[in-house]
Length: 256
Image (cartoon, rainbow, N blue to C red; front, top):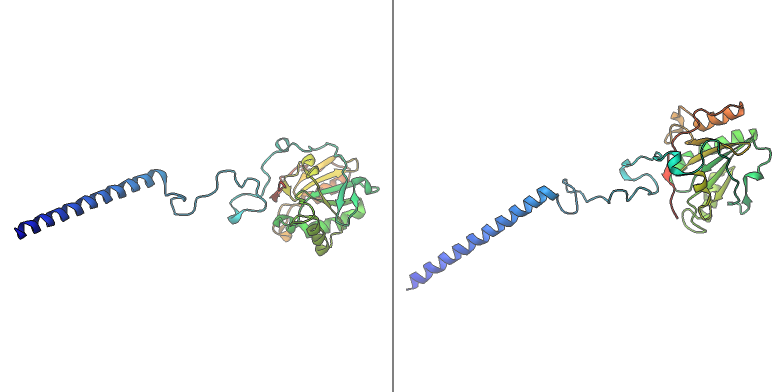
């Protein structure tokens, strides 16, 4: 009797283990099939974390990690909706880092205006600061002054705030005005979408050149084409700049 009971127990245990193993194998097979068709959860097929939804970083400020996105302006002038070549720019009245209000009309006997939308934090804006200083120092005496405007202005405080702008201007010893686009009203009129973004106006405030400063943001010594300076020299000769448009290189203007 004891032998019979023991035999029944062994058969029952063996059957239970077999059924359990079969269920686990079935579950593993289902999981494998799901991953083949859908990919692993919360990641790609290499096990890396899933990326953000398409377009999430379309307007992010600064070059994204790894250089996956181009800093080059993507929209045409028509798509941007700002000034086109030949349009007359309206004047503005913006606060300068010295606390005074500034307008283009403050510059007497101007032969042109180098309006540059730039900011404190963008790496590309920082790369061009010394070049803008050099351009102003060379051409202001000839009637072409740099007018820098911060389209990312965030009020009194913050990295793009007025205090930080004052500190940046002092640190770099800007010889030109550095203006706060309070309320972000001016950059949309011009159609500035990157920092830096240049708009060269003639004496009548007509837009004659729009775009980037030169062809090498990362290395001043390796620049081959100085688009902005060539455009200024063309105006000095009474000629039309050619080219009169290039794609701006820099960080997208940030909505505040």
